[in-house]
Image: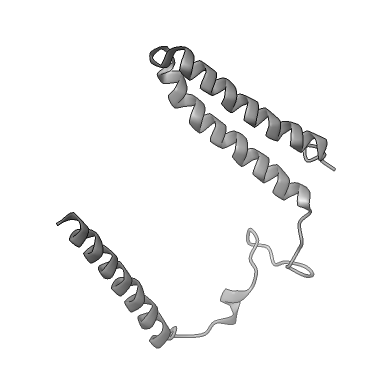
Length: 116
């Protein structure tokens, strides 16, 4: 019975997504307004080109932020059950910090932490 429910769920999902795609392709927008497709920045019209290429430093900074953000997601549950896990939990979190430190060391060696 459980596998039949799962198959039915996927069939219904495919039908709904397919129906939405078909509906959106056959029903055009009511009116075309070119103002809607202009870039908009805080109510001020843009000057010059609007397609800018950011430096790699922004992306590296974002990736490092995500890495350390995910670290906190893992540390909070560990901290709540620290006494129950005992020494095994402590060793596991030390391994986790070691791997995280390797990532930080790699970013440091590649100068990803320098803001230029």
